[in-house]
Length: 201
Image (cartoon, rainbow, N blue to C red; front, side, top):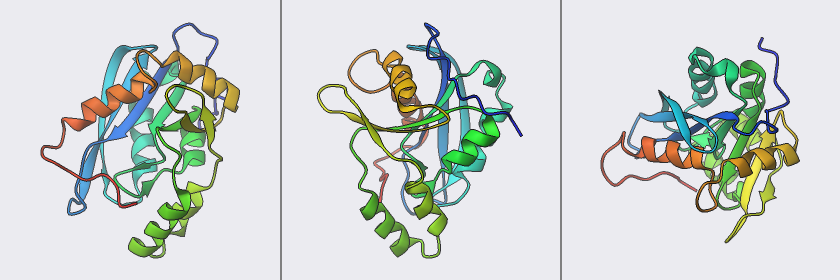
């Protein structure tokens, strides 16, 4: 097992992070691409990773571990950033396993505070028996990052909240959303054509 790194290098002037987002998809799709962007903060792109997960599946954690572990930039990376806790609908990431098996702190970021009860109800309605996904939703508390015009909502594994906030502030270039996640979203958005849906909740 990789030894977890609980110090994500926030004191470095230009830490390196891996940021991931999923491509647009429909719920008729079996799978959807995911894209990872390797960025030396605040905005120097060093590489792009591409994988695939099942829509509403259970393989998001394993696919992230595979992509990160195979990357030649893994050893110099200080943290993993995720746009929310799920990829491909309700393919919920096990943040503790991702941290343990990559050895890297994991930070999730959302623009609005997630409605966890609504997400739990949707999972139980559409994916009966997936109590593991429900459990992962509540595995780590969310805390606000004060940016304008409204706070971002963050969770962190393997790093304390203040260090996570410090790292995320190094990610801000323009606006209030971390640049590596913005880039991952842009790159992912061109991998699936057409007007597509992203969430049941």
